[in-house]
Image (tube, rainbow, N blue to C red; front, side, top):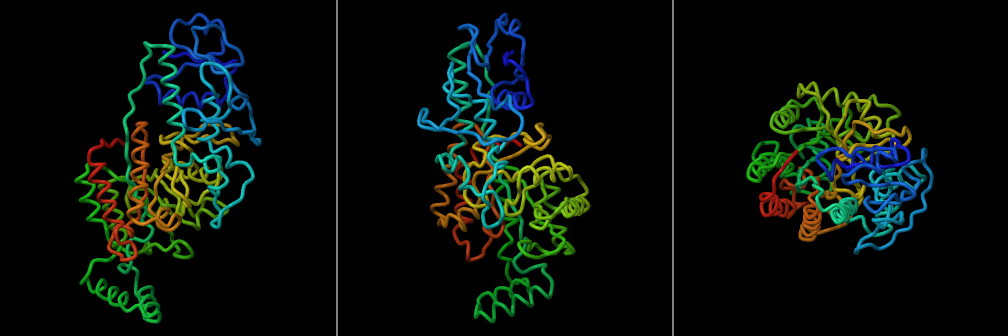
Length: 442
């Protein structure tokens, strides 16, 4: 048993102690607000307050963040600590208030404050502390927890910590299941005319060959992915865009297509699948569109849908996550940026979303991602070779801290579309040379 003392207990404090406790120990940390109980405890104990009791405790001087209510601009001053950044510097056996700092990062506190949006109306990564202080590419929370673990071990040599294991979850966004197939006469006729008018005769020929079943659709990477997952002994999660109206950024195959429905049914039978909520649902004034998409998907697969990831990573806090919880989603994979790769919440672990406005921990569990093919290709303009270096960096740094590594790939990157030559090969190399050797647990 590990005893934690604070002068008072708050929802914020309980939330972050639970998060840290679940990472460090097999059993929950016990919180007490009774000084006598704490002083008389013989086991490992941590004093989180404004003054220490005696040398037998581990003392971290507390800042005010976890004892506040409401949201206000924070005065963040970063400093260098063991070749990485930290903030909320205080006194005691640890050089900063690690509990408050972790709370600030994983709750995305800064996203509740006034900020500029990017071109898609999303929280821009350039606003973030991680970007400004150059730690966007680090799972800083995991780094801090590892250092806290080492410091506690020095104070309490007999303490027993949880043995975490590296986990990898390959995930796929199926925005457009097929380039040509199952799109109906009107969309294909329009495609023929568009390509012919632009003089793209190779695409005209390709479309004709695919529609006559003389060639595989360039976005069809499904059998290849099945074989890759089987070889590497991993179980992916597929997210399907099922907008009922195909317009704007929602260009999925029409949901009336029987072949599209069969594809979804197959993956739901073999793997976990989730909803890829449409752009339309993200800008709607209510949850009606989101609910309709989720209900349609549940009818097709005949099981509850609890996983989701936002199309274009389009969501705002707290409204976006509240919509998910209101419709029964309990696992979300949207925590990352749609404009740059890195750790949006500075963590490579899953965690429950804390609604800062309501001051409550929710049942929605967040699975953050740090690498997406579309970011590397469209936003960062990386070649397949440099994208391989980047995904290897994130793989290695997450594995170093026995964290959770979630990547996002799209079927059209992994098919045979000439625009994405080389991307399928680097993903296969990454999977076979690295993931093959690592255990999967989800």
